[in-house]
Each structure stands twice: as structure tokens, then as C-alpha cells.
Image 1: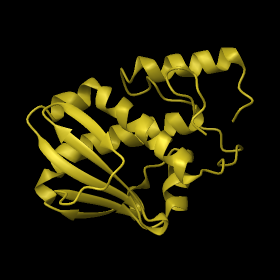
Image 2: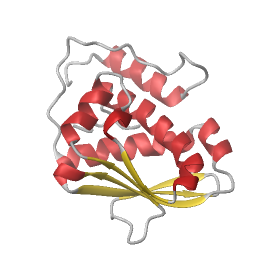
Image 3: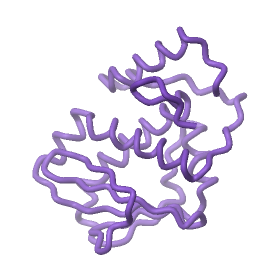
Length: 167
């Protein structure tokens, strides 16, 4: 992942920063021949945080969550790895600490399945378990969809806004 040229980094960064404008906008080509890089918990947290921040900037997401106040706990069960995503009046906040009393819990049994699905351009919804007040999914689903889209891009281009590597 470190063998990107400066031009490729700039093009990928511009793609991420431009955000989705349509069905094809912001999508990076899927390259099946590339293996999934090994991801540590620390790197995973940085990638997840970056994808969550980008999802929170998505105009479509912000329109759907204008009136919401939902605390969600996201968990990769086999890693015992949790983070909180708070949806509050049009904004999405990421927190490293697990929520004590979440409204919704999104849980994936396997981190390998979660990251592999995203790396391959698929939504890891097949293994997703949702618990809590399911009526609040109308707020969490747009955030989740945007998160998956941006997580795929962040995995392909693991750099933050200042071109620092996330892996």
C-alpha cells in the first residue's frame, strides 16, 4: 500500500475529498488481484475513524439525520473491538470508547469477514447483527451505508487529509 506514486495519492485523495456526487462519483476501481493488507487494531481504529468522519460530511447523510439523536455501538466481536458512533442533529461523532447504554448495537462476528467484504467492494451486511431499538435504523442506515462506501475507499487509499499513512 506504500507503493503509490505521489500522483496516484493526489488523485485518490481528490476522489475521497470530493465526496459522493452521484452513483459513480467517489467510487474507486476494485482490484481483485491485490491482497488485503494486514490490519492491526490500531490501524483499524484509524481507518474506521477516517471513514466515519467522511460519512459524517456526506450531505445526503446529514439530510437524513437532521432530527436524530441516536447512540450506536459498533463491534467486531472476535477482536473484542468496539467504538461508538453518535448521530446527533445532523452530525456524526466517532468515539473510541464503547457506549454504556447504546440505542442500537451493530455487531460483526468476524473482523476478517468485515474487512474482506469491504476490501472486495461488498457490504458486510451478511454477517451484521443488529440489536436494540430497530425503529432507529432509519437514522443509522444512511450513516452505515456511507461508512461502508467510505471505508472501501479508505482501505484502498489509507492516507488521512494530511497525506499521513493510516496503516
